[in-house]
Length: 126
Image (cartoon, rainbow, N blue to C red; front, side, top):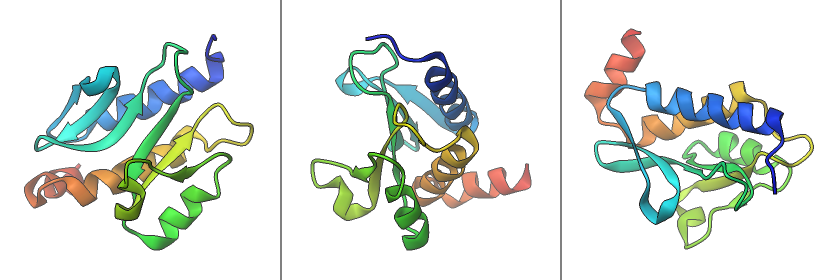
């Protein structure tokens, strides 16, 4: 199934934002894209080839941010018990899915939860 162009552009913006954060690297465990900082995943980006629904999964410790993310169409606590730790899966192909700017805000929050203080300081200095 082809991914709609507008959804792909939103996913690409979110991915580019994540990979531009200080000290990040992209890896492909389980065949899907993840962004890591300090060898720890801070956003699951999934795949963009249409083999699975396009979406991102972020760790939101802030309860209001997590509650807001969960109001997105189709959003849910992440599987494999990750939801209990604050991880939220946000599908991007649903009607009314969040805009790229909001996704980037959530990605940055997830990064700040995982990243070491020196990299957060580097981000704040930008």
